[in-house]
Image (cartoon, rainbow, N blue to C red; front, side):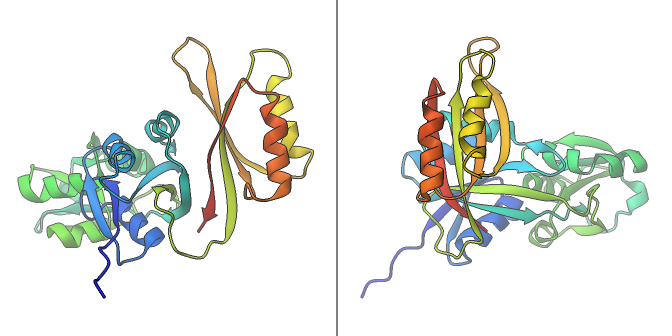
Length: 274
């Protein structure tokens, strides 16, 4: 019997990025992780069938929502098929021979820099934005810019031959990033189920309340609510997560009831949470 080809799951960045850790945590070590330069490239590759699925970050405990990916979820018709909260433990990495006291700049993704902002201020280190944590690590390894380190994972240090100058440089020990997977559904057990919605309402008193009351009146917990601007000035789309699967009659009834109070309502996914 012919061996089945490995499933290909895309992430943004280089090998050694936290996105790749999320790929393996969600889909298992047997998949082929495919690094792409941008988040948009991940979405487009899944939409066009060039990969089986994609994994992207949507929120961190320290940096807040990843607005670009929330907007890309709204732009593309790709269902969310799973979610993972990944513990992020940042390291300060530099070429071998450098010392912590000699570091004046740190390169990393803006979200990672935000998660380490207090540490960098205390040490007088200037943050330098880069497109991805692992790309920052690779550049520091290959180009060896003077007095410059990267903030990335210990895995990235091992991949690119960098020394770990400091560990746990994030500002909170409860530093997590929420990743979602698109396209292929992971074959794994889930701890609970969630449904994600996007909707618009009239700009009138009580419009948003009527949507939320459809869920609260049925004892359903809304775990996230945020707004994103639309193309027309001062008009917004609301993004909401609710505990429970769409197959649950209470969730289905609530969604149907909410729809009557909305201009538009779209289910972004009903999926498992690891």
